[in-house]
Length: 628
Image 1 (cartoon, one colour):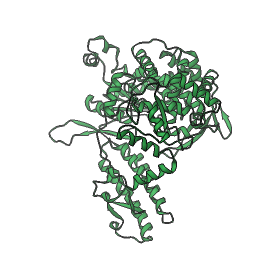
Image 2 (cartoon, helix red, strand yellow):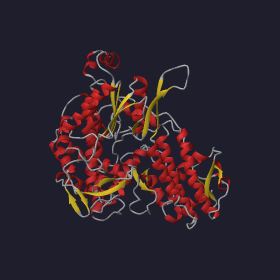
Image 3 (spheres, helix red, strand yellow):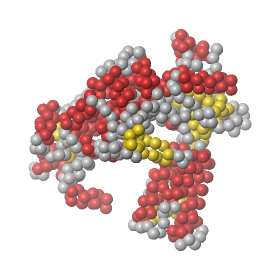
Image 4 (tube, helix red, strand yellow):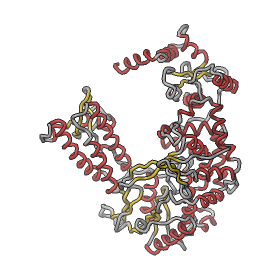
């Protein structure tokens, strides 16, 4: 099974320096291909087209064996097409270039990522948080707060690498991957071809000699690999100093031993953003000099002179990951200790609030009420997104101030919208939040008065930043990985959702090959394509190996996969939510609609499935459910 193989690779990488071979064979494995395609399909970007103008559905609607053969053949003769260059706006008004690979190249990149990730995870530094499984900005934020607070490292080096993603040296990256134990030369050459695919812009192909294209699936992982040695170089100055591991208890006694001769320091990195915490200015200047030389002469990267600064957190604020960190005296007069806090990056927050205000101005009286309500809900989504990002900082007073600014813009708009430009008291346009019909989880207990619009007797309110409750950022537990049994159990508890159990493939090979044969000779409906074969196993896993109607356990001789709404278009009919795992007898009763037998509960479920077989019946049932 794939998960067990990846787990073994992670343990092997973590515990030693053994080489890895035959990675291409693992990429060409059927289960790996299905996993990769499922990952791509579940991503919103699966509908984005490359230069060949194909999306994921062009491949999902192929017969399974045809698609597997296409992918395997493409791996054997890999010549990636250039990426399509697009530009997206940045917070500072500039534009960020993105490269969109073709869908087939994205599948190959995802296959390479699935195979490479457990090896890289076994070698990565513990306090690197960017683009890694189950890690986030929140964990990096908490680590900075904890280290400053507990270790009293008040001097921070804020690092900024000039054009990081565009200046990664391809040959150096491949050497670093070789040092990680990746000795499959075919795999390394495949990665090299990905990096040198080139860019298509204005119908002209531009060769790519440096950098990883932002927008590629594997680019963040490769970027992390490139800076991994830099992380360890700083870590060995104190946190992972070799002398630490010469005692029986490295965690407690080891650090104490190192501290006798070395000053404390630690690097915390998120992708290309990093911060090094130190004890004093002399140490910080020395580490900055070492870092600059290492990046320049070893990794061939340049630090930005203007943005790379040393800051005393007791005097000034340091900006990191959209937050500002600083140290101040406790408000408790009984103690003279210092505490570290984080607040939103004010400039960045103001830019985001301006974008929200700009969306509010798009509401006007020439539109239909439903159109204005749709714009208002888009505004609400932006507000909730911003508030969720900053809820882990000390931001209550700042968010209330932003609410006031936003509501000033809303007041002007509502005056034009409902009073023809004539100003009235603001109470005329607002109602208590709990009286609105949208976002009940945010509004139902709130007496704050908010602006609202009404359409079809439904009141849609303009939510507030301050409705999002603040909380302490979560701490990352060291040594946890999704590639170990212990790590998965911990993550299940943390997110209160279980990982799906890994069940053996239950559909027999005879059934599989007969379906492929029938598809090939057009004896079967087109809905029984690769997407169906891929997703029915996810449906079986979701249904816990039981029949959705009678709850009996299923085996290869009695398992069927039922299309709940077979009348859906081809690109929707095989999504996991439209597939139900049932036993053979229940499946026959669903379609024959006669002689329905079983317990009252089973009969009710079968009748529900029957009502959804025909579009008109399903629409009528849905309407009745809504009205009731």
